[in-house]
Image 1 (tube, rainbow over the protein chains, first blue to last red):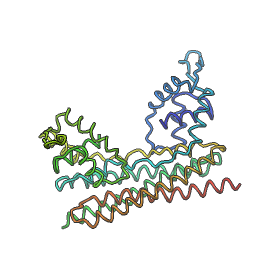
Image 2: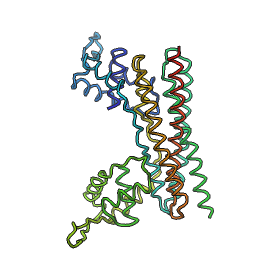
Image 3: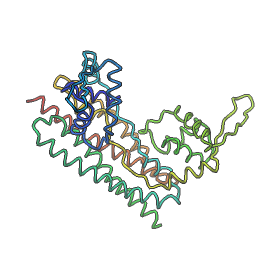
Image 4: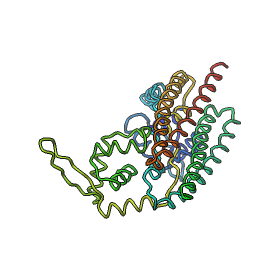
Length: 177
Length: 177
């Protein structure tokens, strides 16, 4: 649902085509969203079927024609409805690692420790990306609220890293007993 | 996927039935997961169809018979495979509020501010629940890693709250310009 609306918002700023939208999405929201660029195409198709975007085809000589999308008036209304609506329930806190931790048996502890370490590395990598992008966004006067989004991603990753350190220490203490 | 495996893990600890499993899941993992108890029944059905759990029916006199689930040997193997596997990629950081923040236009700012405030309240409520449950889990010698899970949930909610405060301040500064 949200991806479709975000694509619609990008199109309201400037009409676009699939690959361009995936790039603009990532530039705006960041890599921690882990957008699969190919997810943009079904979103565009659904928006078109719902009458929220219109399609024009731009011929480009010998190159494949480019399919361009523009919001329809109904699309503009849908965008207004989304951005003007007060729904702000926090997303469920769902993490596969939480479940593994909740249900691991004594014999699963070595695998669990390996997972915690691997997750720490992966989070640190995502955090470095978010911090670098956040600095770039903060320096860009046209960046708007993009820096705030990166800061939100970075805050979550930092909290996750601190917690993972605690988990690692707790598992090591338990093993020491 | 993960919920099915968690249900399987609960059944490996002690056979059970739908409602009982929903209660045990929430006691172990917490309310921030926002489990819809009715989601347990399709999970049980899928586990049964996959041959991972077996069903016995316990007659209870005049009351409706109780359907009890027990892992099959294939279920035990699936559980071992999950808890012994080293997959620990961090979940994508996906938040509807991040998207709203990234795409809000000047005229959406009042709605956005209202959303940030509402989200702060909702997060504070979830955090209070996670902290209370975490204290109970820490005091329970049989609690195992349950306290670590609550701590992970609480850490994420605290980070979200701190960030929401920053967002509120940034939006207020912008409005002041």
